[in-house]
Every structure is written in C-alpha cells, then in structure tokens.
Length: 202
Length: 202
DNA sequence: TCTTTTTTATCACGGCCGTGATACATTGGA
DNA sequence: TCCAATGTATCACGGCCGTGATAAAAAAGA
Image 1 (tube, helix red, strand yellow):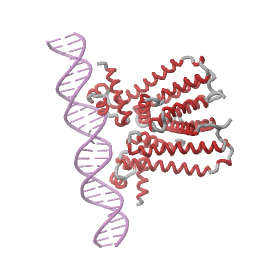
Image 2 (cartoon, helix red, strand yellow):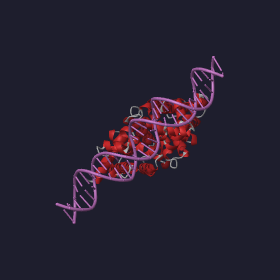
Image 3 (cartoon, protein in one colour):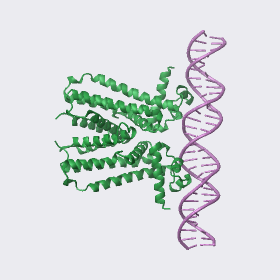
Image 4 (tube, chains in turn green, yellow, red, purple):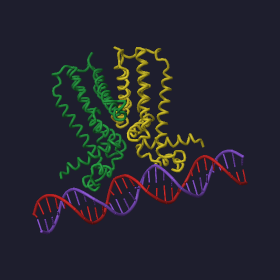
C-alpha cells in the first residue's frame, strides 16, 4: 500500500486522539489503537514518537497553508469590489483560521495543543515559530492589500494592526475551543466583522 | 510550621516547574524536588495529584483576582480624570492580565497551561469556566464605566466589545508567552493602547 | 516525663510510556 | 519458484508515574 497514504492515516488518527483527549495522550499505543493498527506498524512508518509528532504538526500546517492560499487566489483581484465587500471577503478569509464548524474546531484545537506543547518541546519549536511568522505575514498582506484599495482608514500602522488582528484571531480561537458555550461561531464572526469595520474609513 | 505556608511553598514550587518545563512535567516527584521536600511531605498536605492541581489553579486565580480588585479600587472614581487619562488608567489595569514583566510572564504562562489542560481534565473545568466568566465580567464593567463617563464612543455593543477585548488580551498573552522575541511587552502595551484609542469618541 | 498527634521518609505495586530486538507474514520482482 | 524487501505483530527492558501502606522521627500537649 502507498506509504504516503499510511502516514496520512496514522496522522489523522493522531489528530482525532489529540482533539478528543489532548496531545499528551497521543502516545504511540493510543494512536495505533485509534488507527486500528498495531504499534509495530506505526513504528515502521515513523522512527519514533518525536518524528511522528513533528510530521503530524508539519502536515497540519501544510494543510492550513494550502487552504489559505487557495482562498487568497479564489478572492482574486479585490479592487473590482466595493470597499465593504472587500472587507467582507477578507473576513471570510480570516474565518479559515477560526473554529467556525466542527472540522475547523478540531483543527484549531489540535493546533493550539501543538503550539503550546512547542514551548517546552524543542522538536516542535521551529514549526511553531514558522506558524507564528506565517500568520503575521498573511495578515499584514491582507491589511496592506485592503489599504491599497482604500478599504481601510489611511494612516494605520500595518505592523501593529497585523499584530492586533493576530491577537484577536488567536484569542477568539482559544476561547472558542476552551469555552464553546461561551464563545460560539457566531460570536467569532461578529467580532471579526466588528474589528474590520472599526478599521474602515469614516 | 504553619500548614498554610507549607501549602503555599509547595504550590510555588509547582508554579516554577510548570513555568519552566510545562504543567505535564509537574508530577508529585518533580514538584517535591523543586520544593526541596520529600514526596511524602507533599502528600501529607495534598491528598493526591488531582487535589494539588486543583488547589494550585485556585490559588493562582485567587491571587490574580486579588491584584485586579486592588487595581480597581486604587483607580477609584474615574470621572475626575480627562477621557484620555481614563483610558490610560484602564490600559494599566488590563496590563495586569498581560506578561509585561518576568513575574507576570511566569503567571500567564502557567495560567495558559492550566486552562488548556482544563479542556481534557474535568477536575479543572470548573475553575477554567470561572476564570473565563470572571475575565469577561471585569472587561464589561471596565467598558461600561468608561462609556458612562463619555470616554468611549457611544453606541457600542458592550457585550461584543468585551468579547473582542478579551480575545485581544488572550491572544496577546498567548503569543507573548509562546514567542517572546516576536511579541514583546512593548508590543502588547501598544496593541492595547491602540485598541482602546480605536474605541474613543471622535 | 509520657503520650498523642503531626510531619517526614521509604518501599512496593501496578500502570503507561518509548524503544530495541526479534520473529513472522506478505508481497513483489528476478 | 525463490528470494529479498516490505510490512505486521510481540516480547522485554528500563523509566517515570500516582498511590497505598508503613515506619521512623519530631513536635506538642498532658
């Protein structure tokens, strides 16, 4: 069987375990059970637990990056839309980073587990750093593009605003994952919309 | 010796271990070592690991709540200050929730470890929920107080703005803890200031 | 002083973990 | 067909864990 597919199968099992029970419970044995595989099979495709973790986190970042760039291309040339519509499109793009449905909730849940684990796990530190930079680069580009089309108030500090937007999205994600009854998908969407509208020209 | 002091001594050791190595490494043995105590002594003051964790998280929330209410009282009657100064005072208060120095960085680090652990640890779920509600209540009160004094733009949805402010603070804290070189104390302070200024009347 | 309570210190058990080693099964090409 | 490569399945070791049981030491009160 395709080794690539096998690896994906194992990684998906890891994601399910991590989303359900937390990343610390994603041991080789538990992941193997979830994948309905023998632990020996898992170890045949991954040299050890560290490599599995690293590969899983990288897979997740790749998938996320893929979806985001697809969204960006799909958006195309913003300048043909009115300003309000441009901000609406941007909000839709940013929603890809938020737990707005079950799929994204599971992804964001595991993402948060990974980056927090990375604080004390050198094997994941590089990927965590990469993710943080990637997020900020994306947000800066979005803001600059909106501003270039006149969809944002002039005179904004784009670096600071990108940081503020990153904090808003990260904070919403964290709260929505930890307290789903307190921070619903609707709350997330309204907060992002309000934030972008607060950056609109007068 | 005062049993209360002993418990605090153990809990402080747990905080140091959690801040340095992560909460998952805060085993009874590691905490006892850090406290320079025998594991038997620790177990004499705490029935088990679950009780230690619960007590530690409660202690931390109590300390934080104490500092915040002290800050609120210290602020006193805001209406005697000009609007800009009122927002500055509010920003100072909110800074108590951010990792602006080593002490607060350590606290926020452990806080994040606790609330993320609470997602899959029923013994901590209640405290996590309590913390989330407490944070939002505080922020709502701050915003309403500022608005009542005319220091904020009229017509704001205070519930939504409290949620947005909570997300900003949580997101800044998370990023500052995970990526200290990317999100510095100065960045945090500037982001909070910019946020409050964006809520100011025209 | 003697006694009771509190505190400190160990030992041992079972559980889960990652991992090395090894054997068995399956597959696919010469 | 035979053989090598790939994949699957177990066993065993040492490590760290929480915890029950127990004992020794220290402190406190009579």
